[in-house]
Picture 1 (cartoon, helix red, strand yellow):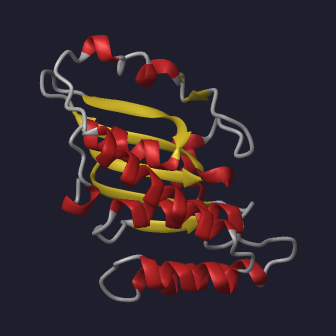
Picture 2 (cartoon, helix red, strand yellow):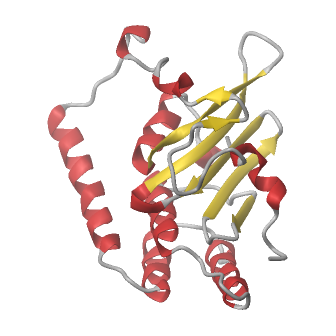
Length: 204
């Protein structure tokens, strides 16, 4: 398909879209989870349980609402109503990708991938325009925010509200970039971004 740019997915090249990632270009998936244990961060802010429960229940209700949607138009309308994006680029691009997939034999966008993307983007809130929004030959949506080669976030949205991610950010100590990557539930990635003070709505 002409609009599916393979170079955007090089960082995901070793990962089966239908399975949990085993490796991103030789970097072990466990690099994140092993470094985020509470013992490595003795000063951890914990929200009051009542507040955390309220936020969790609200996010679950959003997921339940999305779960009930079964057609592309229903899911797209949900996104338009729920997500605060300046201008029409984001949703026009989704519709364009849908039309391009429809024009190709045996291609269609993944509705489960679209649901996951909307859950993730809505939960972030005010968000900057992505550098790119693309779809793979199997209909999986990708979003990328890139300021330069050392500051980027690429996310691949899978079914069941899971995603794969690769984050490049500068090191505070050496002249090299840090690479964070893995697979997790969509809302957990937002917690991870907040933990590293990576703000997509501030253009990373």
